[in-house]
Image (cartoon, rainbow, N blue to C red; front, top):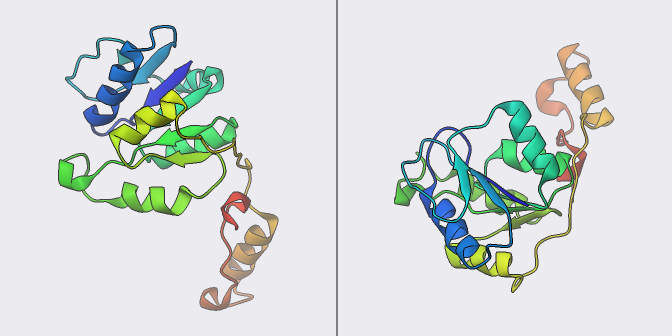
Length: 176
């Protein structure tokens, strides 16, 4: 099963249309999409505007593949459940978001294991067809790196000046 999610703030019809078109040629594949406040009506996939958190969690766990915008919640949840995720970032110039932070997120995280970035609708289709290879499944820890916690604690307690604290990322999976 493919779980498509676009978040809750804005519609992302370009992604939904792309997956819906692909699903039309692959009726044997179950596709479920959370489409946000979209008025678009998909012809080949089951869609709902929103799902409750427990339903979203269940869909993430059951899915073989997550297809999503470049939203951090979707990315982190896919990694949490060790599910491959294919992301298509929203583009501000196309009216899909207020700015291009999703492009920056995709560039930053797209090199991480388990996260595959499609930069165009055609690439989404090629990944779904298997013409392009999805990244191997990655994962994320449920807790922050212990060294990060110790550094943060030291900074809060005034043991070191925050600007002098080592610059270390909160999540171990973000390290190269």
